[in-house]
Length: 223
Image (cartoon, rainbow, N blue to C red; front, side, top):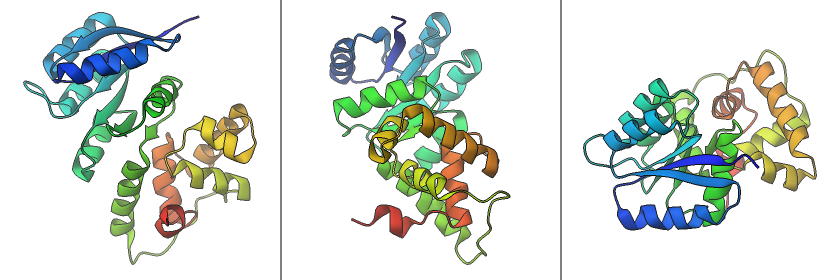
């Protein structure tokens, strides 16, 4: 079995050790390093070339946002998963702009973090439902009062359904479970959605889906 090689970055020793202990219980995950600040994270990422870096934001010397930017420059294949206590939209947007593949809040359950690591390693973009909601709120504010535009090629009912579930922050595996489909089929549908909407990621597709009127905040987030 080829293990997913991980770098844990957090300035709190107890949090690092707790995450390390949790992830070490998974047979397909291998923690190859820990960093206590952004500068150390950059150094270790350059030396170890981890598959996934689990990155805090607020740290000494170099914050997680800037560390993410540098890591993506020196180790492009490393996927950066933000694990933060902050759901501020400014942090979220900036980390995405610097190249983060996902954003999970620290109150997530252990299995949610593990699933997020596997998902970003497989090429998915993964975001906590609250994070996705805040992104969509920002887009809704920016597009309020503008005309709804359809994408060049209309989505099918199934594609709209999958896009709606993706907008809730669900990974491909959970979408497949809810719709009684295979993960492979869900991936194929997402590929079609990306192609039709001219997107390179599920985050871009969700944002364009909101702009096009395929999904709405009211439908996706009512309790």
